[in-house]
Image (cartoon, rainbow, N blue to C red; front, side):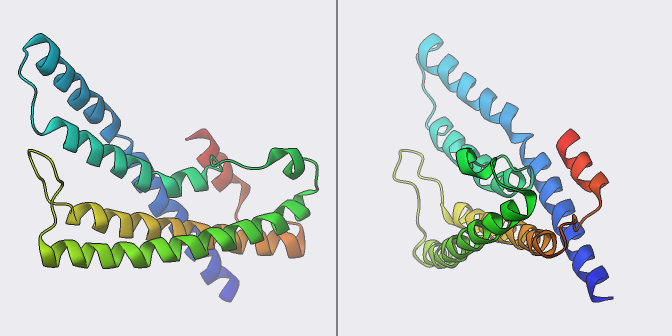
Amino acid sequence: MIMTAIRRYCLSVHAVVAFIGKSVSYLMPILAFVVAFEVFSRYILNKPTIWAYDTSLFMFGYIAALGGAYAQQQRAHINVDILYNKVSARTKSIFNLFSFALAMLFMVIVCKMSIGKFEEALEFNYRRQSEWGPHVHHYWLMMTIASGLLILQLSSDWIESIYHAITGKPFLPDDIRHQEENA
């Protein structure tokens, strides 16, 4: 029963992270349009916008940060392959336990700092120091959510690695991993 609950937790985390990761990817063409529009306005019309730089900066931050948990889910982050690829699957799980624990610790610190920055940005009405001067509190809220998502994904991966290190078997059904790899 407890294993079923843990498995459901991991599957739920995978579903949420996949949904958000795929959803945020739809911002890429919008980001490309904003940058192209700014280039057109600046160099063709000779009338640069005051909003395009800040908008593209925020959008890129959203894409990179919210896509981080999805990249972790897809195993797209960098790895020290020279050693990692030469060991058994169980040893890889043990390596993963250490790296995931360190990453979770770092992300907890990032999440805590992002919450503080969000509260500070709201309290003091922080804005970007640019001609347009948009608010920045939304960015710190997004960083809090993104770091929380990555913590959830890392915790799910950590559970999977513990199970694999002990039993030598995958924790989640193979079809879940194949769906993620083919997505």
